[in-house]
Image (cartoon, rainbow, N blue to C red; front, top):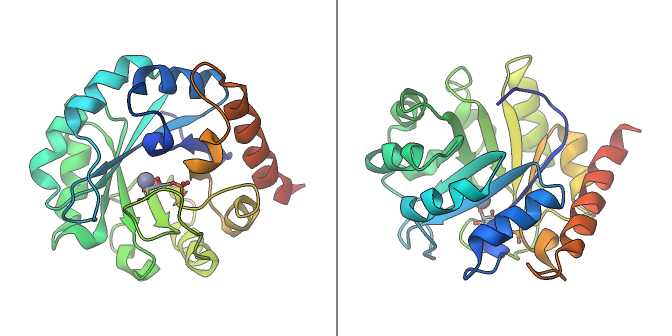
Length: 229
Ligand code: DX5
Ligand code: ZN
């Protein structure tokens, strides 16, 4: 994984056909996805359950690019090696998931993955002030985690604050929740470079008719890139 701040679209497979994950991953990459975002939920840290490391390992051969694993689980540390061994390129843990996020980020890097830290909407940017040199990605949640298809919560001020805290460190700012062609320009303008989108990418398409995925991805990307023009 090389670092740059170009806009990257990361479809969340939470909005994919759960009976067809391998084919869905291949379809979104063929349609222009940059990263594949995998939402792991435990029914404890968030009120929903999705899938675990075995599913990540099963889809890995179907993903050519970056597998971006978002852990909405607590505790995190006992499962880091399992997700790294499943082939995660990025493993993101929530700052709210336990008392030792610093140790968690060290452990993710030690396992050979890029270390991400996620912030719920109610958590201030300052929560990562002492983690900036330990992290490769800061995920700013623009919904309360647990479900796809929720309404976007404007976190532009937090994104701007983080962008200035990061300075020239090679740290991505990822936005997760309610990203669509309307909200993408706001977050890109504030300094985000990785845009997760579930419902806005998968709507209208399917494995047998994947062209809408491509149209949706191009529309979100153009909207985000448009702010620089
Ligand atoms: C929310 C997840 C998100 C979500 C995004 O808990 O982390 O990745 O699935 O879905 P949309 O784009 O539909 O808000
Ligand atoms: Zn996510």
